[in-house]
Length: 627
Image (cartoon, rainbow, N blue to C red; front, side, top):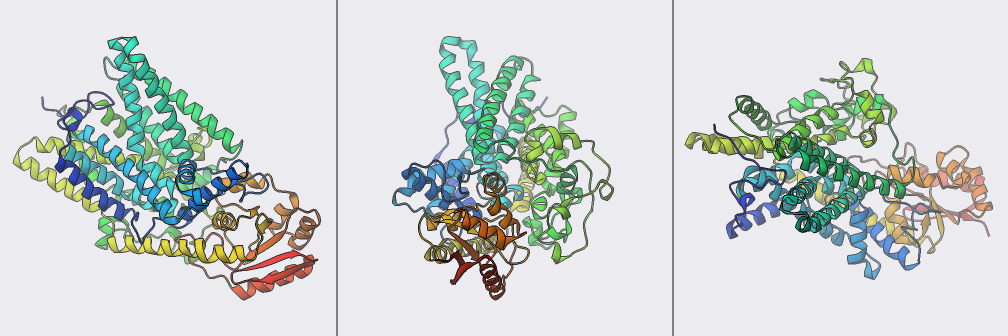
């Protein structure tokens, strides 16, 4: 009976290429280098471009802050989130590494931050290549699998979210580390004396990877957990592997629990809120966007084919549309693979089977508690910046219930993962595995099979191919925004302040963004101590430490009275009023002009009512206590 051996254990020790112990040739490395260079261009990790503005500048600034605060004997970052200092809910390992490598001169540039991003991505690429090589049994198909996964719109379009994208790119690497745990446990059959040191080392590695992944990005920690648990369960179902798999699963759960405890201790209780069921219902992926492409994504979009759906037409916003289309190649591969497996014409080993099962679970979780099909709103540009209330989807507005609401309210991790479409990254990995397995089986079928395999792989590549012009334009625009905030606005902000002053950035324009991304860069580069901090989770944490007058002033209820109380109570040295939105200035999908004259006028009125002096600068107004 013909079959494909994708791997004989979760580490994938059986295969036709390097997975079976063959060494990579110079041609293999040359191909890999060319693919890697193309991927670096696609990820905008090349000179003249950056993947995003808000996180590149914020990560560079936080690295500076860690270095400067350590030099002053202060823990963490003292320039944002005054008085306690702001934590870093995700990206901390990258920030610490940047501080250690580049902050000796007290400055971390965007180019240095981009270099570090690129280094992490290169590691992710190499690990993905190794994983997919073991699944496919050959270096060339493994390389293609790595490219298909890393270029998948579900992952590639996450560039706006900084290290979150890097964490998801590392998913194959995380899975490899957990597979080594399974192999180390299996080595006990050769004697505990020889196996124990290796097992201890691998357990330490898995614990370290679990901590690293959670502090880097909570989503990738959660997705990696689903992948690894699924692979351990798949191994446990195979005769002769149950004991090893159950021991590995127990150790893995313990390592994950330790990482979660460390993370909870760092952030504090209550930092990760749980959204209502109606929010998860709105955030769920619409099935129509899984079955049909969107006109602004992937190869089909380049041809102008697909749904003309924009973010303001959905309940979940732009993040719920990123790369959720399954792809024709994936559907074909999944159907063929399922048919072969049902007819016992192919053998799917635990590693591949675990990934496939995880992909199905992730797809279900991405749908939310109710099924949606073509449940879109009328096109309305006014909904582009949809508030939380507009994302609440009542049950009667959606399709039938999937009876999964309890999961989104009670299961740790899942109840905190607000962007359900990101589960589709695991589903995309499963589609890649399905395509590879079908391609390997087709190649074994002679000339016609090879032609069919080549057609399937070409279609798969076409469907993930990004628009090169739009991609490069996005990278250049991100760099321009980043240079504006990192250079021009930061210099203007610092020119009106004195080092170590206590500062409150107060936005006075209408409908301003609540997530004050830019404050992370402005305050660090000015070396002042700001109450503000960017990031929704960090903001929740630091605002608990704010004195009441500061908190009320930001809420905008009785600002003049609150500011007077803050200055009288010696809580504040200066209020800085920006002439731009602290969120929109770095955010790639919102362009909104702030009326400068109106903001200045409001600042003058506020200063008069609060009894403060005011000085206008190029991009800020500064309010201080009168002498």
